[in-house]
Structures are given as structure tokens and as C-alpha cells.
Length: 192
Image 1 (tube, rainbow, N blue to C red):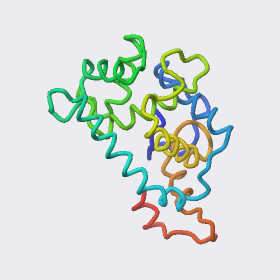
Image 2 (cartoon, one colour; image 1 turned 60 degrees about the horizontal axis):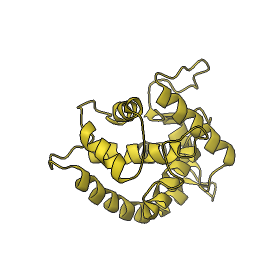
Image 3 (cartoon, rainbow, N blue to C red; image 1 turned 120 degrees about the horizontal axis):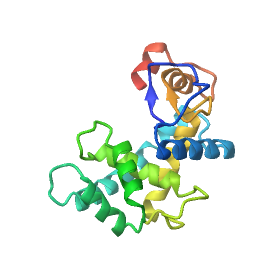
Image 4 (cartoon, rainbow, N blue to C red; image 1 turned 180 degrees about the horizontal axis):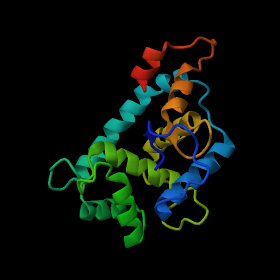
């Protein structure tokens, strides 16, 4: 699902998506990569951290609003109510796929960081030409810039444009700077 991985650092030539959702996400990322991105260096990303942090605080308030039982996670029923309130219309199968894909630690509840991944995926999929499930906007106009930044960041980091970010790609991106200087290997790995 477009995650950073340290296992196999080479691009997968015969990669096959495990779910329809994963295939749509990779396809959407590749479409976005063709358009290019505004990120020119890892430093550009770092400079956006304060605005991203502010937006994440707004997302935290949204998360807490939909975590009706205040247990620190959003379950599938709470997610359905969240989508309805945010004006996303998904089929039961799509909701199940999204929930499973974003419930990264597979504990049947979405923690805040997983909720951010979910919102980013929904934002990414809104540009899918076949998508009927989202309006033209994500329903949170003040957060769209943050999700655009996150998608652009992923496009910048995904050097081989395969829809995944490997450890090597991350280190390569960290080492790219406008001045031509390189971070030491230790600094790059710490940032990774």
C-alpha cells in the first residue's frame, strides 16, 4: 500500500496488487507522478512540517469527534458514520477494503496515525476518473493542502515511480539537497 519497506529494495517487475484498492492506489500514485510534484528536495518537505503539524491537529479534532466511545480508535461503524458526515459514499466492500488497508497494525481499530493514512488515501483516490464515491473536494477544504503536500512528498520519495517507497529511495531523497551536499549515512538513516 505505498509504504516504506526495507525488505526488497529493487523494484518489483511482476508486482501484483493484493486488493482492488491497492491497485487503485498504486495507479493513482503513478498518475500523480506523471504530473510531477512541487517537492524539489527533502529540505522543501522539512520546511512544510509546521503547516502539516497544524493540519494534523485539526485532523486530531476530527478523529476525536468520530471516536464516539473515546477508546483511541475508530472502528468500522464509526468509520461509516465518519464517511457519511464527510460526504464520502463508498460501498460496503470499499469501506471494508479501506479499513483493512489502513488498519496497519490489524487490531480492528484505526488509531490516529492510521486515520491520517486513511484520509490521505481517500484524498488520493478522489482524482480517480472511475471514482463516483467522492465529491470534487474532500469535504475538508482547510485540510486539502496538507493532503496535497503528503501526496507530493510521496511522489518525490518514490524515485522509481512504482507506487512504493523503499529504504534506498528514502535515503536517496534525504541525501538530495539544493546545494549538492549530502547528509552522512547515519543522519539519513535517522531521518528514515
